[in-house]
Amino acid sequence: MPGSKSISNRALLLSALAEGSTLLIDLLDADDTRVMREAMTALGVTLVAAADGLRVDGCAGRFPAREARLFLGNAGTAFRSLTAALAFADGRYELDGVARMRERPIGDLVDALNDLGALIRYEERAGFPPLRIEPARAISADRVAVRSDVSSQFLSGLLMAAPMVAPRGGLRIAVQGTLISQPYVKMTVALMQRFGIVVREEGGEFVVPAGVYRSPGRFVVEGDASGASYFLALGAIAGGPVRVEGVGRDSVQGDVRFADALAAMGATIEVGEGHISAAAPAAGRLRGIDADFNHIPDAAMTIAIAALFADGPSTLRNIGSWRVKETDRIAAMTTELRKLGAAVEEGADWLRVTPPRTWREATIDTYDDHRMAMCFALAAVAGLPVHIRDPKCVAKTFPDYFDRLAALTAGAPQPTRDQARS
Image (cartoon, rainbow, N blue to C red; front, top):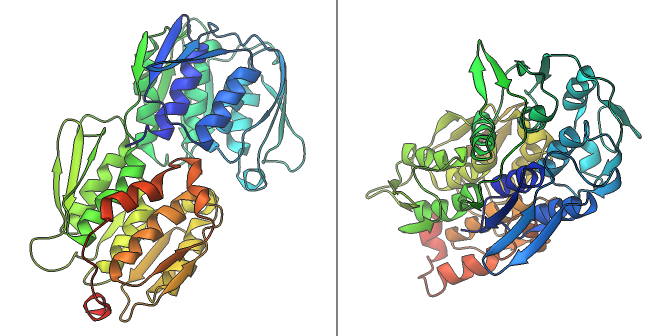
């Protein structure tokens, strides 16, 4: 698997903020990490390509550039974490992105940062990018609250920035509302520890000590667990086994729990130290599932595709965060799944998929959303062509996805249309 996007962008930021140089190995090379690298360069951080990775010369918590205009595309991990890190960088910065990024909320994070003493203003619509950041006021608070029921990236960004502004006794961060995507926050805390900052949890709050990140010297980026979901699902619906390497039982990524969801549907799953494999049930079809996917919202999209091949309806619950992703994923999935012949119901934070009685050849709109393109390609297992519009959108996180998929399926026997419909 290519490197994890979530780990890659966190590692880039932490390496830049650390004392010393860090060699990042297996860093993802895709649109989302490219805009983060460009941002680091614009902020005066030295990045040097090496034979075995990318060397980042840390700035010990103080970016050399005190003015910069950053264009961050539609990379939420980059936009949210940089907003927090630059809020107290004693400079003037402008952050913007594509049209969809201007529709993705950031007000909960900005409110928390401004409560601490930051000076962040909205350039256009309140609560949304673009943003202008001015030098912060004097900071004396030792506690701040942040809402994280829209995106866990608000809390992750605040956590990574906290050591630079925490008082001697540490900064306490309270979470208001239900924290979604908790595994991503655990990932952030684990990576901060790799860079020398240990976060404690006390009384339902996160306590972040004051300090400067320290380079671990070398940092190896795990394979992408979200990207692995497509290939594991392929094994579960097309026979398999399919084995993904670079991510396994000790992963810090919550999306490895996608394998648990496939197992609940009846797939045969094996998890090793650095690999996971999936195969179809030994007998019969996958089972329909009714489950809460708050913890793995990105990978849950792939479950909606696997549900097409189940023996009955599947219900995906607590996925309201889909509404504010690269597109409104609940609406998009509903529309495109129906094209294939599925019966689909949607709610504010749930989706119910009933497998097609008769499959239909379909042209899938991707809404400039990489995950729409990648997961819907798997529907071709039914034996009918699936036409993907704007396939290049996968460059956001997995540029060679279709090449990998083609190599894996080349020469595989194709079911007849009658077999697919049965």
